[in-house]
Image (tube, rainbow, N blue to C red; front, side):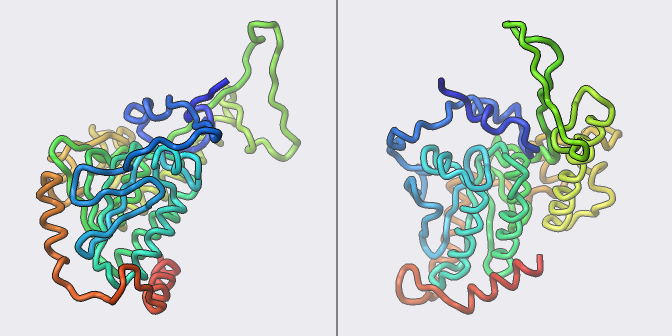
Amino acid sequence: MASSIGAHLGGQIMALDFERGHLLLSEVWPDRSTDPAAGPVMAGGPVEIRRGERFAVSRRVAVMPIRGILTPDSEVLERYFGWATYQGIEAACAEIAANEDVSAAVLDVNSPGGMVMGLEGAAQAVAALAAIKPVHVLVNPMAASAAYFIASQASDITMIPGSELGSIGTMRSSVWPVKPDNWGDQWGVHLSSHARAKNPNPTSETGLAEIQRSLDEAEAAFLDAVATGRGLDRAGLPKHLSVTDDEADGGAMYRTDQALARNLADGAETRAAFYERVLSAYAGQPGATGARALSASARARLALAISNT
């Protein structure tokens, strides 16, 4: 029986905008016995990225699509849907940094977010790349939660008309047996004496406290990254992001004017104008011979930048 992507990811701490991601979560988990669908992951512009490619280069700019529900290293979702993974983002950033024929990078983002596990590594890789080469983000048309965590580490963020970004915070779904099922069987979850935090009981006060602790810990790392990446005051960030006078009312998605007012983005532009501006800015710069010339010194600079983040 086929199961959904959401069922496979259930119970994880997520940096995800569920409202905007539920259609992707309802997709059936790919059948490995079938071939991935043909067609590009990203098309209709100056760069076309084929399935199996994590980025493509045009006029000395590497364009990397950030698509789908983001996971640490799901080869299945990357191969069959063209969705980004955190390890894939890290690997692509390292390759872009080392390629002396590439002067800058674009992250073309359309994602509702994804898992927290592995997210910080991808964000640090983007920050490290931005310390070496300009990294321009295009919100096209959504950078939600984990996707914004990553985008916030870039050099600048541009939004297309009608786009949204934000959903800064974390969430988790919980399941716990409370009564017999339709066949009269009573299911149970049993933990060893010193492993109550392994699977917290959401129906108990201690279980809820542990769930809240883990969510707040992940949210704190999210807020730290946004404050650093966007140059915002960390102490005042929860209130800055709230849609009311209560700082608990954060986690919203913001349209262009709201995002710009909160300094969560830097500008608004059509997709065509963005690519024309960015690609033209780097097209005439000199480069190394060969399309994929690798530089040991660039790799060393990237490793140093990652170690300092």
